[in-house]
Length: 292
Image (cartoon, rainbow, N blue to C red; front, top):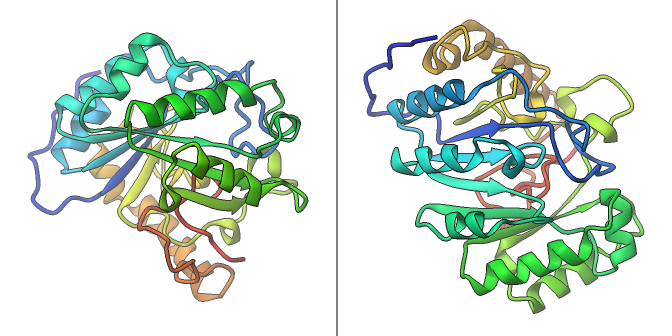
C-alpha cells in the first residue's frame, strides 16, 4: 500500500506516539494491560506499515515515539524501526523488560536520541518473579545496572500488583543501583488486560489520553493511548495518521474520556507534585498516578 505523506505542519498534532509493536513477550505479567506473553504474535502490521507510520508521524512534527508491546525488542524489525525513527529526527524510548538485551541492541540503545524504560517489582527475586510469571529478576536487575553503567537515559516503574509488595525496598534498591530518584515512579496495576475482571472502562484512564498522544497497535488500530485500545479511532492501513487524529472517531473518543474526567471518575490533575508531563496509565514506568 502506498500513501502520500502530508506536508509537514508547524503545530504538531502529537507530542508522543506509542508504537505498540507486538504481543510477543518472554514474560506473562499478572497485570499486563494487553495480555502479552510467550504465545503472543506480532500482528498484521508489516515492516512497510510501521515505516510509513513513522514517516507520517515525522511529517506531522511528532517529537517522541515510544516502542512498546509486549516486548518490542522481540519484533523482527525492531532495530530497523528505531533507526528509522532516529533518522527522522524523532526521540525514541524503548519500553523493555530488559530480560534479554543483545550486543547489537546495547549499541543501539547508546545512540543519541534513544532512552530506555523498564519495570521492576521488588528487591525480592521471588516476589518480582511472581509478578512476571518467569525467573526474570536477576536478568532485569543486571541489565538495569548495565544500562546505568552505559549512561543510557533510563526510567523505571514499580507497579504494585498487591498491597504487600516490597515497593519501598524496590525503590531504595534501584537508587542504590544508580537509577536517579526522579526517574523512578510507583503506580498500581490498572484494570485492563489480565488485571481487569470486567469490560474496559474510561474511569481507569488518567484523562490525558488523546491529548497530544496516541497509540498504534499491532493490527494498525489507532487509539488515544495504549491503555484505551478498545476505543478504535481508525487504522493506519486504511487512512493516514493525520486524517485519523483529526477524524470524528478520535474526537468522539476524546469526548468520552473528557466526560469521565468532568464526572469525577478520574482526575488528570490529581497527581503527585513531581509528576512529569508524560502519562501512560497502567503501563510499567507510568509518569502519572491517576486517581479513581
